[in-house]
Image 1: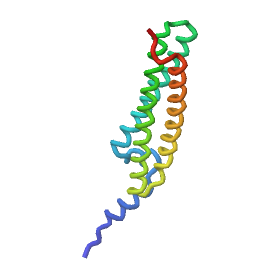
Image 2 (image 1 turned 180 degrees about the horizontal axis):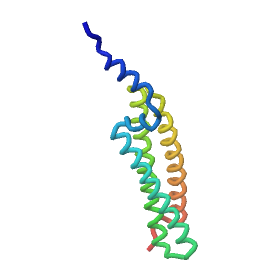
Image 3 (image 1 turned 30 degrees about the vertical axis):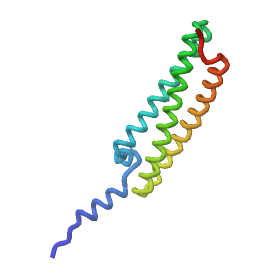
Image 4 (image 1 turned 135 degrees about the vertical axis):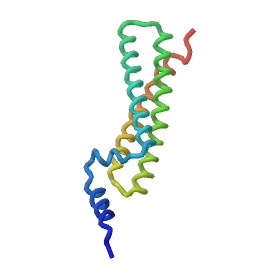
Amino acid sequence: MKRNLTTAKNITNNNSKTGTEQQKDKPLLSLLVKWTVWGILAFNLINVVLYILGSYRKTPDEVQLTLVRICLMLSVLMIISSLYGIILDLYYMFTRRRPAYLGGIAGYFITIVLGALLVFGTAFIISAVGGNLH
């Protein structure tokens, strides 16, 4: 009777993967959520830079308020996406029994804190201006 050694080799190969090889094993949904959060964060930071440059160059108040409102919407969207990412990483961490997802959870937590700071800052600016400019 022959023994099948390919299963033992596959088990050994799966346990000895490096960090980059384990990242390739991430599900597509997890990668899409991660890149969505990164994209929203990039758009939000570009928006903040435009607001700061607009304040320096004395652009009209309507334009500045529009930038603040866009930043508010992007921040809320970033918080919601990050919460979804945390839930997704927790699910994959417990089902796949890999602690490697803890780094992603920490990253999502940092983006939630950054998004909350931006939400409170933009809400303060909108309330200070009076909400609408005519």
